[in-house]
Length: 508
Image 1 (tube, rainbow, N blue to C red):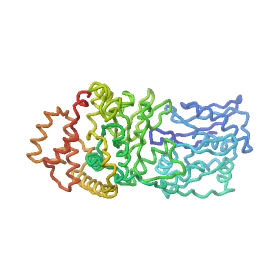
Image 2: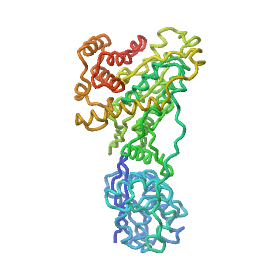
Image 3: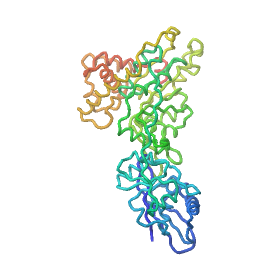
Image 4: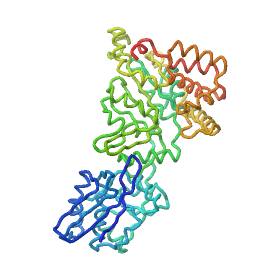
């Protein structure tokens, strides 16, 4: 007799259905797991055996075969422990055979029979609901899985004995409640930044249109401080985006207690991060920083200090909005529609005393050349951030606060959403994500603006990508001004942010 138990295997944030087929047959005692398992799945034999012993059950001295179907799909992770254990319990008559039909099961077993939390409970719950299944998951994952749907039946036991009693009808486990929303801490306010009015304006434009941004300036000029204020200018996540972000965090194991938040992600990895840490990958592919920054901000401080391989790996995700991890036997993709914000010093020594480089232009050229030209071409707004004077620091904070700027950003985004709907364009409504085919229809600059753009494109040697990105930034500036037509003044400001200082231009 073969007992079938449903579970899942993760490909990105997609939970693919897997059947755990359990057979207890006559023959020499053995315990085999087949179906392309990894080391963690293979080691489930010892965890399951010990957990069943702790629950007062002994495996019969027979040949036990566990098949994980489909056999050509890689099976990774310890969440296969619980479906294997329940399949064995059904095969030896410890629980009813039909009790597991229509259930998706996942969970890791401890040696004493308790069920430990696993990553990916939310995508598994979404997949179970789509298949019309109930979900059996660890107690610690119950609040996370409950966010999938209020109609999804969920059983979240603490131990193997609890789930056995529930399946036999001896004990009834209540459905877990969704986890409480994540407590929102204080948001850094833009008013705290003294001076740097041009940089604040660039930050507002970047927030309104989802544009990539690069600050270049001496140490202590406020580059990191400005970047940390960007989340306070961005609107909360929409419900669809919130669920997608939560599923990525769930697969990465960062959704403890099922606490969701509508605040956009802000990821700031250290410059020693590897390419796999940024893009994702590893022996067991996991989402990287760009996937965890989906629908939010990826801040790279000290940009030239990152490895060239890691930086160049960002080029394709910046265009496609997804992180693709290719292996010989499978391919995984994670959503990665993030906004890149970077900061860098003009040179290695940072400017020295008085913010003047002690080694001359060659130092700046060598340092800035660590960032490749193709990556710089994908950054819409690039500007110098000068040192803040003592007079600016001593002046009272009379600038606009984040709430005032965020209101303008939200209004500009509403105009973009309405335009996207009017043009019938799918996908993200932000100007930074406009397809090339729709840029002209969305911008339509006037005659004076067209003339300026043609002259500037020749003078600045803009690439085709740079040309279209200037139009997108100008469209965002016009949206902030509340006008439908893109004029010369909007294009002039967009071009000013695109132009690079001479040392940086030589380095690129």
